Image 1 (cartoon, rainbow, N blue to C red):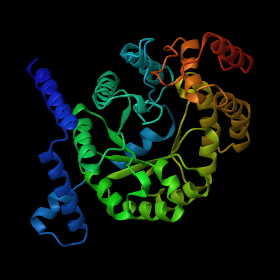
Image 2 (cartoon, rainbow, N blue to C red):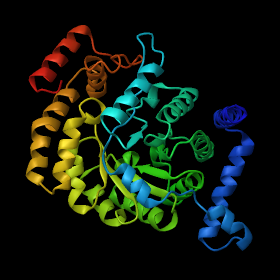
Image 3 (cartoon, rainbow, N blue to C red):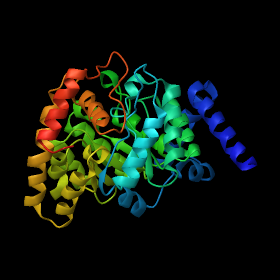
Length: 361
């Protein structure tokens, strides 16, 4: 009992440090960043370099295994009053792990709706997920595009509550970062917990900027171990060629994005079907494992394309419709917090008719 109390006290203390992001903690993070940079340049005293430069890592074989194949993101569910429905979050986790056989479950800034959560709620959600998963799957937490000091504090919190990895989305308002400052940002965070880089913000910076960052991180920051792509196209194909031997790479969004990366080196993909109809996700993955690209393309043609074409056209776009699917599948309620749109009863009826017509439910 004493051990349980000690663990709870540690997580509360860590969460408080993250929320306060005190000047002392921030200064320590900045100092660590500068020291790590000096270590990389061979300028710091040897006794201090070893401590500053040692990143937090897991065996790459473990990371690759966890992120191979389809994996689901963790949606934040709400009640009709706008409160987080933690019971539905836990129940959905059970579905994804026990029925969908997910090896990894992943919080993301977008799908987990961090845009309408407070910092306190992000910390609560992260701990609730880790506690409920209870080592049944690999857990990737996510940050909220915070500055380096606060992201480091959150990385400490994630490590202490038991997350396996942290997806880092760097802030870049008005193209304010440089490759050097981003390398420092990822280095500082990855000294606390293994990092998954999400490419989302790099799409606006141009290929040259993003590819230079990928090269630098690959060569200089061993604590970066994975990528989730949101950009697609030629950019991610080039990233695959640069980093597939070093990192675990995952496609974001749809199976066709995975197919875009497939010839160049990719381990897995974010799968919406894993959250409500996992047999479709695994049908595609079995075809990939057999190198039966005709069968894989058939799944994209018959399932992915019609589903996402419909979802994106819904009022409130695809996420409103996905939450509607969860209600129709008896996994959670349709509700999202205002000002985000939640489907009306009439829209739910239309969604249900579409899903039945295409045998999604």
